[in-house]
Image (tube, rainbow, N blue to C red; front, side):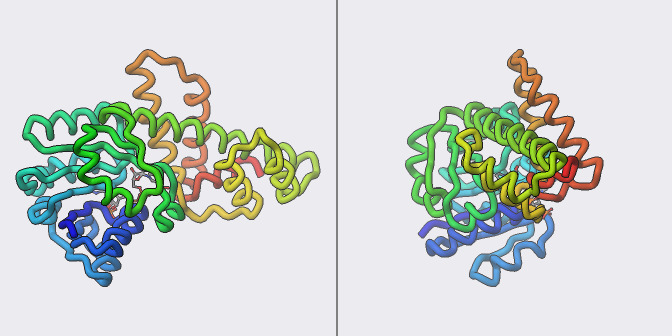
Length: 287
Ligand SMILES: NC(=O)c1ccc[n+]([C@@H]2O[C@H](COP(=O)([O-])OP(=O)(O)OC[C@H]3O[C@@H](n4cnc5c(N)ncnc54)[C@H](OP(=O)(O)O)[C@@H]3O)[C@@H](O)[C@H]2O)c1
């Protein structure tokens, strides 16, 4: 049993932290909006008033929050940041999807203070989090990963050691960009086939039988056909990942015209009021 602090009780954090309780770890939770800790407290976790306080008794401190700004606040926030509560030898792990530059800055900061740190974003959404079948992309020292591997295994079916804190975030953003481009293309193709007189169900049924439709896209097609846009991976987070991916590409001098064009489509979806909908909701622009 390990004392684990989990910072960020959003949609993903809550689901992932539940597995830590099931694995009999002692769980210390914190969330900016305190009420969101309640479901975990009812299952046996202890809630704290700040990241610093949650971190104080923990051997492993995990954060799963929205973006760079939230991550900075949680780890380094004045007075209340988790970094001020970390005890000697505690391992800090960042699960959020962030810019590679901020991820590396945080890794460097932790290294300067002698805290082992991993940047370990996840591939998969709420259903995979519930099933404990996320794919985790870990950046950092292999020996540090070995110490927390059993903890990561409680919510991730596959754990890849990708490289450093920059590499794991760069790969995560690349995966989401590729996924987001495919989903936007599927939305407009579905609209085109519907204009040609095919029902949504028939169009997706055909497309899902073809080798050109990736496994991830098949599930999204089914949601589009059912017009089921209940949030799993919300468009607001998709756009954030495109934004971060584009900034990284720009910093590297990489040319990403398709990603730039598709980001504008997700922005259009946000402007149309679909930001909180699942990524499949991009189809509402066309169907
Ligand atoms: N949803 C997915 O399918 C999915 C899949 C893979 C990875 N991710 C990534 O996982 C992370 C979490 O996603 P999610 O779906 O769990 O999002 P979410 O449900 O919107 O939760 C966001 C969390 O971040 C916290 N937060 C936001 N701004 C903050 C700030 N300034 N200071 C402190 N805390 C702040 C929120 O606190 P409050 O409750 O107070 O708002 C909440 O706990 C994101 O980086 C996302 O890109 C998501």
